Image 1 (tube, rainbow, N blue to C red):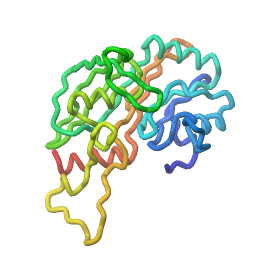
Image 2: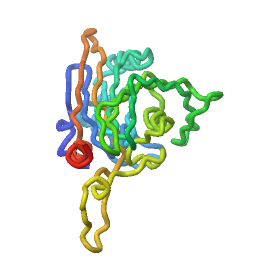
Image 3: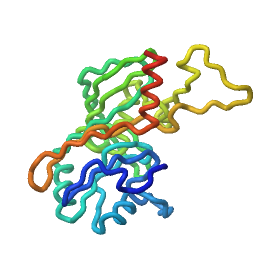
Length: 240
């Protein structure tokens, strides 16, 4: 993870909130078993003493993440999440040429508490996501994902149910993208072990809207990080 300091991640800040563009491979909170590694909460508390992370992104997921600077801000954001008033939009690159036109996936998710998530119509909690295809490539699709609820792995497992697993998401049978698979005539140097274009699953929290304590909308756009931007650039060049 390469950033010089927490300030470099900030997209928005006022008296009550900070919104950062979380880099991939940085956990939102202390993970179970407390390895003591750097995470968003620890970095935020060094920047602002009372900081609290208002929601989570998976460790590999990049993008917009809300941090409250005081207890009042935290309560205000938490109520909006609880009432599903926060608008969240993610971008994902998925395997295959898939056509989603306001497709609503409403499949209940069961989380057994051990990062193991399944679709379970009997025991699962309601989970709903709306999908739209944004851009088609020969072998892949850029998809806009709007989660209405906020279950663990929700976007990832819902896409997998549509036979459109996120590239690189091995947990849900998504395969990594290699340059050799999209660039005609690409040849590896002898003895070279080819690395995937992205070394994680291709999911990014792109857009976020919530209300500040003054009841004004806070609208956030989080630019793609380098690895996601590189994947899109190479798909535009070689797989369009």
